[in-house]
Length: 115
Image 1 (cartoon, rainbow, N blue to C red):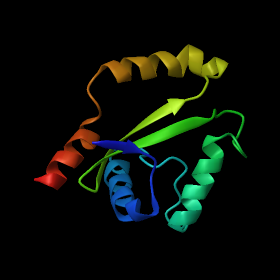
Image 2: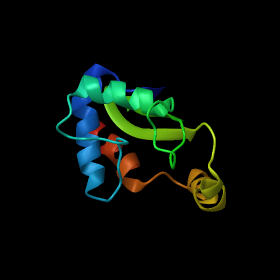
Image 3: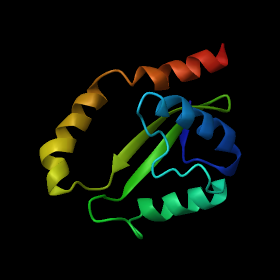
Image 4: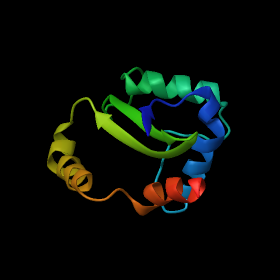
């Protein structure tokens, strides 16, 4: 598995993953707007992830995507810092999630697409 940022050529796979997981209530692509051109989306998310134009309730972050044989199979998000609210609510939830098994939709997507 390669762990990296999304690229232009990842558009079909990333959009498919987002649509698949949106049905389960999970936003695979943060701040995604389906009508936005892919290159613009990548640029916007890059700026937001550095904190440029980011609303105060959010913190800068890094998203890395797992890619196996050209198939986008998962995502890991790393916050660069936590807000007071995330320290109280979001932080422990994220830690418990990190110690468990990844969401089924993410894990199964890669396995089913390669079979």
